[in-house]
Every structure is written in C-alpha cells, then in structure tokens.
Length: 325
Image (cartoon, rainbow, N blue to C red; front, top):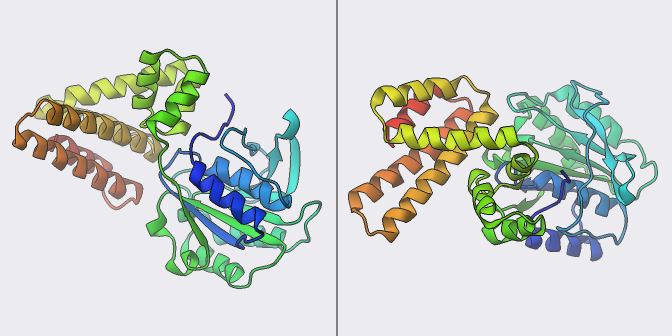
C-alpha cells in the first residue's frame, strides 16, 4: 500500500507558499490527531525545503523511512526518497522516531544536533524530523531548546505531535505551529472511490478507521486487522448495553493491550457513541438518553488522555468509561 497523503490541502498550500515565497521558518511544530498523515506531509515538506522552489501536493506518494540503520537507541535514521520510483538515501534528511511508550532521551537529541552541525551533503538544507516530540524527556527538550534558540541558516527542524499540551511552551514559542485536522468523509470517499471500492465497504472503512488515513490504510492492507477492528466495534456495542459483569470483563481484556491499541479502540468507541447520538437526534429520542451519550463521550475523551499520559490505571479508567455507557 502506498503512503499517499489524503486531505490537508490547506496545510499543504500554506507550506508550499512559504517555500515559494522564501518565508520558511527554522522550526515547525506539526500538531494534530494520531494517524492522519502528519509525518507523510513532514517528509514531503522536508524535501521541498531542501530543493529550492519545489512544491508538493496531497496526491503525491510520501518519502519513506527505512526500518533499519539505527544510530542511537534505534531512533535516528536517514530518510529514503522514493522519487521516480527509486529508493535513494537522503543523508541530509534525518528522522528521529520513538515507539509509543518510549522516551526520546538527551543522547538522541545530541546525536541529532551533531548531525545537523555538519554542512549539507547535497541539498540546500539539512532537515530533521522529530516524530512524537511529546516523548522527549525534560532534559532532551531543554537540549533541543538550545538549538532552536540559535538557528542555523542551513538547517530546519520539524516536530510532530498529537499531544501539543505536553510540549514545552518555550519550544512552542520558537516554532511555526501548523495544525492538522482529521480529513473529511468526502476526501476519504474520493480516495476510496479511486480505488474502486464499493459504497458499502467505503462506509465501513471510514467508520472503522475513525476517518484516520493511517488506520484506513492498515484496514485496506490487512483483512485480519479489518476483521479484528470490526469485532472490537461489535464487542463495545454489546458491552455498552450489557450487564456490569460484562463491562468489567471487557475492560480487563482491553487493559492488557499496549497504549497504542487502547487508543485505537477508544477512538472506535467514540465513533459508536457519536453515531448513537446522531441516531437519537434524528429519531427525536429522549433528552435523558442524549445526555447519557454525551456523558459517555466525555468519559472516553478524558479516559484516553489519562491512559496515554500514564496518569491512571488503564483497567480502572476503562471500567469507568463502560459504566457510563
């Protein structure tokens, strides 16, 4: 499956205009929900920054980062350009990544700074992309701050986050902030129709992916993931209307999963609850039922934040959410 950018036309137009007008910043903060294409846009924008006058669109195939070539903690790697269909290492484009639950430590930031201090090998600029920037430890963030305070004309840094509230205000203030939104249903439908998917499957894919292209691509790639996701949808629908013991058992089952999988499941719960609320509104059902669904939606949102920020026991949070459903 290709890494095609879906949506984000306004963001891409803004970034292209800054490149064409030579009004680019030394640092950017890309913020928005998980799995919507921020990193794909960052990879394309990075190469646009490196090639004076070059622009990109949301119909292009984004550059990739190879799974290997670890330098520090498996986190830093040079990017791969997929221009002309041919994989080619770009030594001036560096990506610092972290798995969910892992921290970005000061040693990784210092390695990044060391690489950025070198003169560009073949491009106009060296560009560094820091994915999941909220994972930086305090020491790592303070180390990066020194680089942001003394920008070089031959470097640019792109921070990517889904938790902008966890980024130091001093770092935010030194970055051009770019906000990403979840692509619209219409944008996703256009993409899926181009793939010749039928209407019923398009409806399922948009619903099960929570309108997040990263999840949708995985659904398209893997029948197993599609079926598992569909099963999670059905399990929640049953548990929400079931007895307390069923809710408790379901909460215990989910709590053993990794944070990323829990986040995906909670996003799916939000879709179910929002659909239920819309049905209540259309069918003019009782105000009490609408208020109950709104309370459940609020519990899911707050619970997701607590779990992702490791501020509460996942099992207790999930039990509380299901009790409110």
